[in-house]
Length: 347
Image (tube, rainbow, N blue to C red; front, side, top):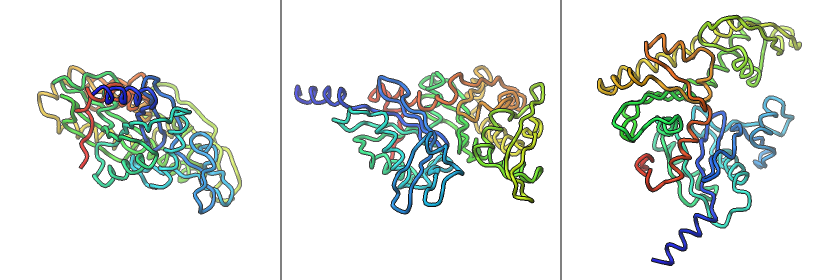
């Protein structure tokens, strides 16, 4: 008994247990007792066919759309799940090494966040990828549960709390009560689809080809879901579709709002559908408590106002919207034995 206790204390002292929000566009890592230690884009730059890693995260993002022949900048996550198994493994190894530093005496325990609509096959792919990085224990947690904990909602209480988590690849709308997800609506429309909509709109209406990073910049600077006052103007640079020569255009916030209409409408409809599926007692709680929004996509200007108008419910955007999921998983990690019921059971 004494040896077992000493072994456990040694293990806890010399391992850095981590919680990972493995997102389509961004990966965040929370280290037990230290908080968020990594916030990097989910991108890997690979050289040749040998899968030699040139760069990961921010360094690899700078290479997107700019790589010479022989180097590819890859986004290995698609719609919240693994699209390229080998590349995710390389990316996770690099990220975990960054946060572990020299404390590698004992392999870490890992909690990893996954979309609620994930299949058993996709769960297995996530577990295998994390296992390959050297983790000794792997636990999965549903993103809506993690987001609700990160926002500070009382997930263990018998009251209903609605969370809308808009990431890069998926939008998760869930009603959480008694440590579980009561109703959920998961759609694969989120930040990436908004960027794609901007790229297509600019191409169709201005004959200008722009890249992913430019589209994301436009969305952040002048993108909106609801007319919120003055119409901002932004200069956009790209390649002319007809002449093939680089050119600059000016585009307004109203035009970008028009471009974003389709993905935004799909998200609002998904929220309405989730509300329709909510049991009456929990629906009454949501009337009192409102809807909470998390994830980077929730920061689109006016999206909260549009959802509030369409549902006639109060809508609140979390202060730490981009960090909610990993912070929630981190809180579970700090006392994993007490919070065991919040983790997903895997077959």
